[in-house]
Image 1 (cartoon, rainbow, N blue to C red):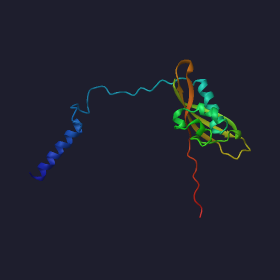
Image 2 (cartoon, rainbow, N blue to C red; image 1 turned 60 degrees about the vertical axis):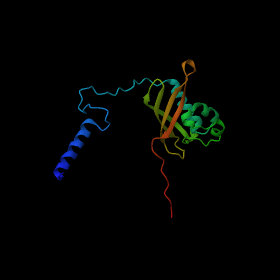
Image 3 (cartoon, one colour; image 1 turned 135 degrees about the vertical axis):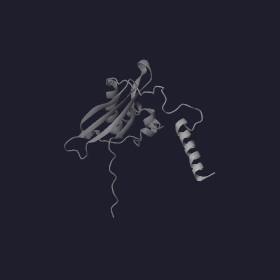
Length: 170
């Protein structure tokens, strides 16, 4: 077979794979008349007042490393990462610290709010005399349980910007 014959066969194979796909299970062309699946966003709802309260308590307990027993109950198992309450009470927890006693103001902006979960941006502004910088965090909340036993827990707490890593000095 000549070079041009091999090129023709390779072209036909490439076209066939591109047109019909390589799964071998579908003969439908990519230019099908079937309607495309359309993404339908979930319907957002106003933030549950209880979720906002839990977020505030979490900042004053887990983030500030104050009353860690209460903060354990506010933390969702995803955030606890398998830690027992005893381990949590040591304060070595997967929650970025911010000194609550230095906070002048904490404001929340709702990024997403659904019946069973929410994501907020939290701006922590320190007092004028504080030696800490303002910081923005994302906090995620999930509703656990059913009916009257349902409650909100924090499953996510991260700074919006990564903290600066100090450079090595010679």
